[in-house]
Length: 311
Image 1 (cartoon, rainbow, N blue to C red):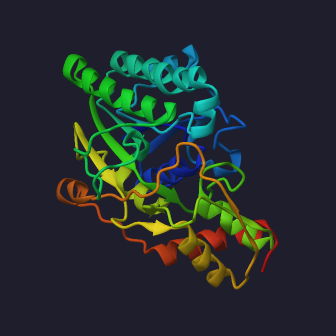
Image 2: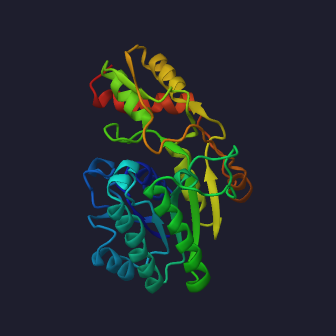
Image 3: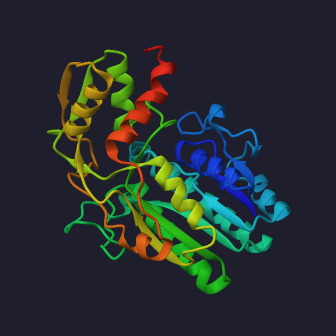
């Protein structure tokens, strides 16, 4: 199968690219390697064909029209909540207009299906837990708004143009290759700082809980979606919340080092508690998370430790 993955040099999508290639698919990658995004050359699988392109560009659209991929996996995005609040117009240009540029090209190319990485940020603070696919979406950031808007556009393109889709609403994804220098990815940030013996900052009271899911399990869901789950939306999570304080304690135990903690106020837009019911993904895709939190944390630490020259 010929597949195009946007954002394929990024944290999550590079793992998806690896799995697609391992299963014998032909894979092309679009990524503009934006310094404030997640795309990095070292994440690229050399077996994929790489194109350094912006999803808003005519060149990106023409690539789809020329190559005619059967499936387009849409992971490229402006993913920073802070950037979205500071520059909402930029956020909309990338996450809405950039995606529409590609969707129009998919129609011209005769693409069968798109797989779209949405987000738990589309829900905002949930009123009832666990979150499911029918939980009301009340996003509190421009980032969450643009992800929700694209879900509506995908419904339109399916109904009006016949382009099939699968939408994944992700919990908090972690694992190797996550950027430990950005605002997102508390696990990678903590792991780097503890490995370096540096102070860790914990916002709010640290008891806020999120649903942490290992990146390899996300890649497995994206593999299943190649042939299943047409025109469906799936929540992907572990099914339980873990507090920031607990993550810190587990990482200190795994690394074997204690570091000082400084407390900071709540970040704008942060949600106190959210975790997901992934029953729909179990029933339709046969997907289950395979990686326990402790094992995922160990694999993440093992990835970062050699880079930081820590034994």
